[in-house]
Structure formats: C-alpha cells, structure tokens
Image (tube, rainbow, N blue to C red; front, side):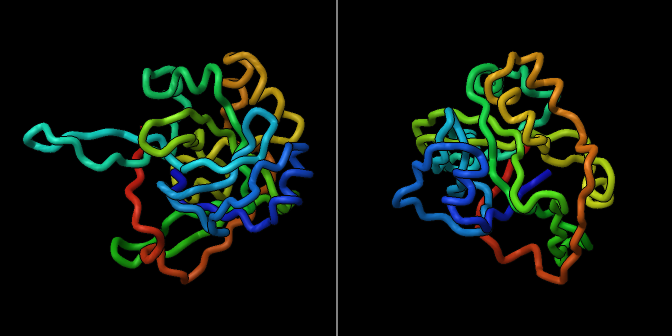
Length: 208
C-alpha cells in the first residue's frame, strides 16, 4: 500500500496535462506527500488541494473521542463498503503523481523504494474524495493487486490510469470505474534507495 508519493511538477504543468482549471492559488504542500497532509487532486474538472486520507474517528477506552486517523488507501474489494461506497459512486478523482514509494528492508531499517512510469513524467492514480467535518475536502487512493516490479515491493499497488481512461474513471458508471481497478499492464521503473523510510511526516496510515 502507498503511504508516500511525489508530485514534483508545477501546478501550471499539471493543470495543462490534465486539462483542468487551476484552483491552487495560495496552496501550500510539499513535493513529497504523506498521509494526513495536503496534496493536489483533480476533481470536478479542477486542480485543487485536499488532505490525503479520510478521517477515521476512534474512541478511547473510556469512550472519549481520539484524534482522527487518516485512512489514505481504499482497497478495490472494499469500495462497496459503507466507508467508501458514496464516494466511489459519486466522487471519483484523479491524483497527479510523479512517483510513489514503498518501504523495503528489515523492521527499524526500512528504506524507500520509488516506483514510476518511464513513459510519463506525471500520471494519474485513481482516487475518491469527500467533504469531512474534521479536515474539509479529503481524498484517498484506490489500491489493487501489485504486478511486475511493484510486486517485488508489496502485494498491493495504486490503480494507475491511462490518459484515455481519465474520463471513464471520473464520469463513468460504477461498473465502468470498477473495471479500471486492475493491475497496471504498462512498464514501471523501480528505484531502490538507501534513504531511510522513517523521518518523514508523523502521520498514521490506515487501509480499509
């Protein structure tokens, strides 16, 4: 599952590539995006900022409300669950990405392995979004079974969308969208680094 990705292109390039209206004036987010932090999303034809992860509200042992946790990945086989259903049916989005990372190595010394498409400097990951009382607009990535070099890092990977499938994902029926939730058949590049996985933004990720 994905708990870190890069978006290193400037907003003008991204808006043009996705043929979207640029709504990012005054937006502030880093080139590396972690769960619970803001990222750029294309929703309803606009390039805008949202928080990565749906808030999961938990209670403590005495019933007291705890700080919400960001649920940043949605499994394909769980899109019909109450947590995701409404967003999948009516609020699908595109997440612009230049690469995503997986953690590899022994516990306590994991490093970042980056995956990208050699045929595209920026590409779309399938996403869903909603309004939340806790964080305003928020989004999550849709995950499917990993394939190719991605399977060397993790059993799951984000749903990557070909450019011709952008409209089918955002505007198609749920059946059409669900058919796109499949392992990527195109080429991928795996870049294993010695960069420690730990030390990034302090956010807890959940997968539902």
